[in-house]
Length: 92
Image (cartoon, rainbow, N blue to C red; front, side, top):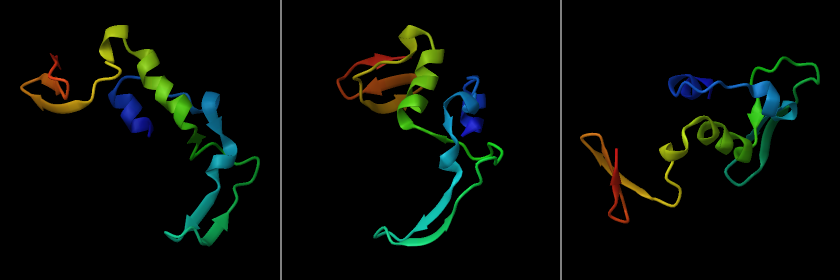
């Protein structure tokens, strides 16, 4: 996860939004049957932080200029640096 943030030049500070209990390991069958569970100790180092989707969703847009994100536009395709949206609009 941190690699994507580095590519986008966004500082990723997992300790500020990470949930330590998210480092537990659970392997499940497709039907939800638990195959294996390994709980991380409470003093475990923050190696595999679990970050809530809402917190993660705000990290990137909050670090970008206001005009960089077009909410409510469904992306269709890119062509020569031009982004085309399903409503017929385009942007660079």
